[in-house]
Every structure is written in C-alpha cells, then in structure tokens.
Length: 267
Image (cartoon, rainbow, N blue to C red; front, top):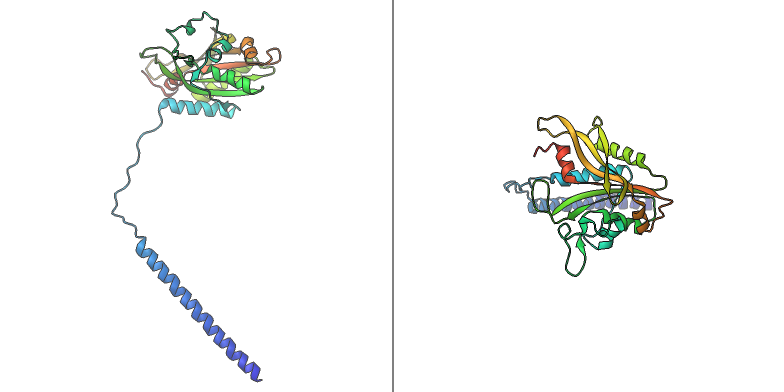
C-alpha cells in the first residue's frame, strides 16, 4: 500500500517536470523566433531591382524554332569547328578542284593552312565519319565568305543544314519531311514547290519555295527558303559510307531569310 502511494507521488512529480520542460521549450522557441524576426527585417523601402528589357534576336529565335521542329522528327543537333580544312569543306563534298568557291575571292583562307568554313556541310561529313547510319542531324552555326555588306550579303552569317542517311531513303522522303517542316513553320495552308537546281554535293538537287506573305501589300508569293537534294554518292564514299547500301538527303537554309519570311519582315 505504501509503495502504491509512493508511486502516485512519483508520477505526479514526473508530470510536473514534463510540463515544466515543455513550457521552457516553448519559451526558448519563442525567444529564438523573436531574435530571428529582429534580425531578418524586410526593408520595403529598397528600390525595385530593374528588369532587363529585350529578347532574343529574330534569327536566334528562328534557329531555336527550326531546331525544335526537326527535333520533334528525330533529328539531333551536331556541331563542328568554324576553322576547317580543305578536305572537309570542299574535297569530301564533291567540289571539283577548279570550283569558283575555292578561289580566294570567295573563301577566307588562313595563314599556315586552313580556312573559315563557307557552309556547315563539313559537319555532315564529320558526323558520317564518326557515326554509322542511320544518321539524322541538324547542323546550325556561323559560316564565313568573302562578301561585302549589302542588303543580302555579309562576311559572316548563320546557316542550318539537315542530313538524313539510312537504307532506302529517296526523294519522296525529302519532299515529305520538308513539306511537313514548312507547314509547321509557316502554317498548314501554305503551298510548297520544288524546282530543279544544282549543288556539287547532292544529285538530284532542288530549290524549295514556300508561298508566304511578307506583309508588304503584295500578298502571297513564292519565296525560296532552302536548297536540298539527295546526298551525292561521292560524298557518302568520301565519308566512309557504303553508297551502294545507304542513301540520304541534305538540306541547307539561311535562318535570316527564314526569319524574314516567317515573321513578315518587310525590308
């Protein structure tokens, strides 16, 4: 009986101690919060930080949009050096030795050898040398030519090229892919057409036109937006690809013209 009474007293003391500890804990937490509030005061009198104004350049926006459209079709972005050698820039792309593009008046050659790439096509060759087909890439980047500034020329400008190499690829694949791209970029109601052309690295070759309205009051009219064609067998062979087994198509476009026609830039 005495032990029971003594146990009840112990429990009472225990409850009192627990209550005292909880009260002290609450006091310490409140004190810490008061100290924090005293040191972390928000000064509402500070001036608002200025927001940066501006946006991406229309050409940069266009390149991102083109990359996204082709990316949705399974194309990966590939890059290459701006300083190239004669083989990757010309020889591997089936340029004859006396081609005008290889002259000093058109190409920027560097002292000690090398040149500034005149197109992003060398990326196609380098990709085929590194990876076995199937290959589907988009190669955006800057290119350099010995042109003077005017309304349609610049010594440095952006270019985007696409390449698809696999077994059984034909011109119908090229037309279907590029027509789908044009409908995504310009709108599903836009008409497209392909005209015969010539490029050393494709055979057959074509120019692709899209019917667009540049907002200059002339209404819809045909505007050339890119060159394209089936990859020349000699290009595949130079890159180490079996041209008897594989075929492919290539396309090259200027983002500046795409931006102008896509965004309705009049001048």
